[in-house]
Image (cartoon, rainbow, N blue to C red; front, side):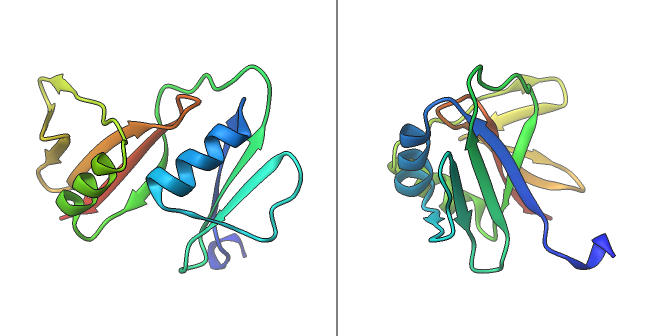
Length: 127
């Protein structure tokens, strides 16, 4: 059954070398030895993975594509910002970031940033 197996996020990139540097050095992910040509496979200790493959033309999505779960979003945001990650800032009637973090009552806290191809990534700490 699908509900019992691992789930993996998949993104595209127009520059795999730049993407690899971003995810390794700025985000802190580890590249898997199982990576194959034209692909980057990053593994998490819990078994989840992020696969990025090379594709000309880039990404057209305008929504969060990968969410990293956090136990301490304030600390994680500070660490990523120190590594050069630039966070998105929002100021909407129902969503406003303060120090890069938006708080949604009853849901949790989120912070968004983009990879070199414009893929939208999020940190999320549930309430």
